Amino acid sequence: NGTRLAYLSAMATVKSQQAEVMRILESKSIQYELIDISVGGEVRDEMRSKAGNPTAVPPQFFNEDQYCGNYEMFSDAVEEDKVEQFLKMA
Image (cartoon, rainbow, N blue to C red; front, side, top):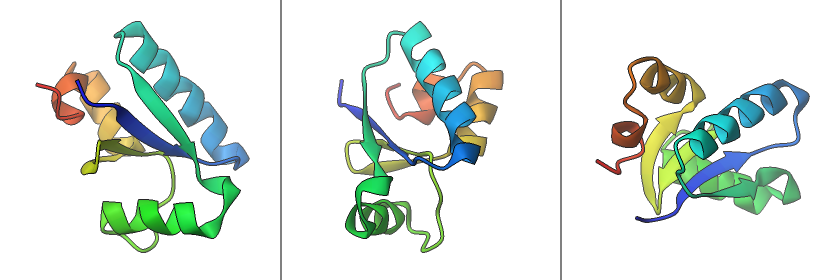
């Protein structure tokens, strides 16, 4: 299994989403790596480039370099019990 990457930020509005994402991934024993985009514009720009959206905001999800989607898409996948498919693991 490749490492799932979730790009995160220090923005207060993202904190609850970040906690929810980590809780769900941990409950499913899915390994992940968090990348903090607040460390610099270069990391944010990389996230936006990989997502194909110049205004993308975290959290964004990737399986290695393959874009999976944003928080809303992740949330929909959780409701449909399709997190592994969303993360391109299945």
